[in-house]
Length: 291
Ligand code: AMP
Image (cartoon, rainbow, N blue to C red):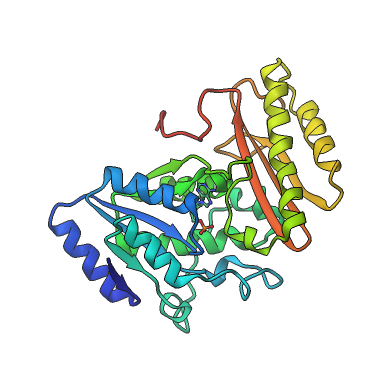
């Protein structure tokens, strides 16, 4: 695996790959890698000739009171994991390399960026779309891989790609969970043993909603009430949002018959956790099937 810290070197390496007619895949991450990230790498390895991963804790997507400084950084372990998955190129720039003094250009997907996580994390998606647009320009992959774990992020990035005619296919990979159902997250390292158990209530709430849908309940209001009831059983878990929305527009839907995203975010102490399921249609992923 070749590791690059400068934009110019990464750009040159990727240009070389494309010139050779090779299919290039991109997996953007913030590091602290777990099996969820590695599932994206494996999907890339399975369908691309050359796999590029990035590790960049993007300051632009963190709010002033968020966990940028304490975000877990496990560089050596990450490099070993990516080597083991046969990643070819790793791009790990410094914040100054990505945002040199005087950089003033941002990519903003209006509307969508203020929904779900964007509502409680103002500026978050502006940070995401700006860094992803830059990574897309630096790497210019044929395919980029993202996790369904961040379902709102997927909607925002798809919209950016559509609106800006970006010639990159977005492939979304299913959520990888711990054996007990908890959606894997780098932020779990913040949780103590008790909180780790309490966090599972998010998955329980989603499973209960799935159960109700399977039994014929289609009304979002009722399903949300049920889910909130489950989460209320663990008072330490404070709901940020529990919403049932259209997976593309992120607008609330009143019933789930046409397929809907059930998305939840909650705080456990200062740790913010998210999870989601897709109900009312076959796939657990907001799939590429119709795209
Ligand atoms: P992050 O490092 O948190 O920015 O995540 C990098 C990529 O990995 C994003 O596309 C995430 O959606 C994806 N990802 C994170 N956790 C999981 C998971 N548990 N299952 C699948 N994909 C994930």
